[in-house]
Image 1: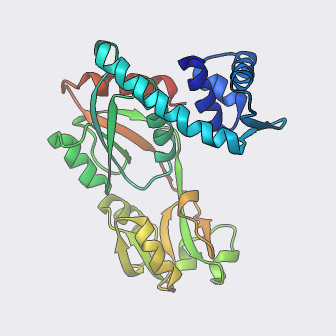
Image 2: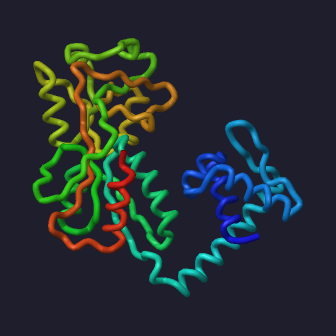
Length: 286
């Protein structure tokens, strides 16, 4: 038994897929399968139940996973103490709005941490103006937002995951049956709308007359409760993470798209950790 075999076992257990584990470890699929088989033979127990598409831990596999996790944690601490110069250490502060693009960013954070376990990420949620201000002040290293604020003072990177605006309604609302929603369809509705001033002006300008605004929100997950209580339709991005049982999202027409951006302060000396993460993002953002 060696550390590589334990790393392979842990990755396969977490991903529940030999092929995916091999890709993340930059190994061939046969190598990963062979290493797991050798580990099972050495331990004299079956660790995984295998199907054509996935693997799942047996009861003995789950017990061994706790042991393997402890061994790897102790090993990594020892390696970090003895060879600290090979690993980055530090903190990265990121602000993000509630936008679908954060799903991609969260994957990159996970994958980067596997390469650099000495990095700790601090995630702050907020609206676009708050994030921009905190990046400008240096409180945040990076900000993920949409093209809703001025970015002249920042370096920026266009991020995958354009989001379409639409309306979130209860399933029993008449608008839930529509394929698309026009501005005139909402004229008699009491609306829940974002507080972000750029979004606010853009969305209210979509109407031929001033809409009836029942509430404004900064965090969509809180505003969803107002929709569920029947206060009115909520204007928001299309985001699967916002859907709840009993709610339906319908896109508006003509479609309004929001492009996500990752921003950081222009001409600012970044830490080695932030520079390494930005390079990693460039390489993996598509």
